[in-house]
Amino acid sequence: MKHIFIVDDEKHIRDLIGKYLTKEGYKTTIFSNGSNVLSEMKRQRPDLIVLDIMMPGISGLDLCKEIRKESELPIIFVSAKDEEIDRILGLELGADDYLSKPFSPRELLIRIKNIFKRIEKQESVKSEVITIKDMEIDFSRRFVSCGDIEVKLTSKEYDLLSYLGRNHNMPFKREQLIENIWGYDYIGDDRMIDDLIKRLRKKLKDVNSEVSIETVWGYGYRLDE
Image 1 (cartoon, rainbow, N blue to C red):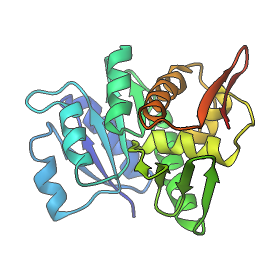
Image 2 (image 1 turned 120 degrees about the vertical axis):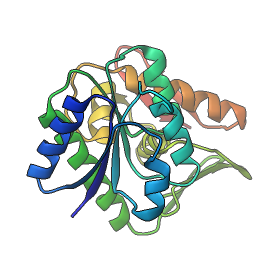
Image 3 (image 1 turned 180 degrees about the horizontal axis):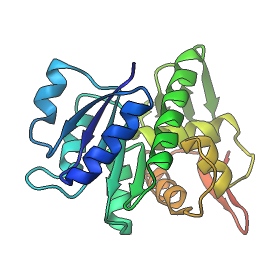
């Protein structure tokens, strides 16, 4: 049974998510704020966290930052805020997904299931390393380096770069990347991909990589040698 932490200061949101996930067979632990989450994680490790951004005391963003110091467990942000800066910060800090309130519990469930499916698929992949010019991607270790320099990536940055790496020189539409990286059908918000591409380009530039992510005008993106 997968165990999910639900962290939200709105009682009706906590109750709604908790009842829906329990009905679907998940074990849940509910928090009204982020203050006790880190200490509870020392007692029991969840498989995923559904985390609100705007909360009294420690915010969801700050809590995510603390969790990422020690763990790569999946995090889905849910928030009434849908500003670009919040989405970018969430991705930068290593969130796996971002869902704006109000949302459908069914949509949240689909995203949770897709994250678990993706993790199971990654764990079943045999050890593999590919090299593209000066870039090396080690899939078993989820490790990327250019020359002798490690490229430090968030979970989603790695997922996107490794997918482009497996299919380098092939162009992909934004909706194709969303479907393959997030695991659900395109729902009209391609900003998530654009945000990640910007961050990856900067990180590759910072290590002077010979590999670049090219814009295919009127289509999408590809990893170019």
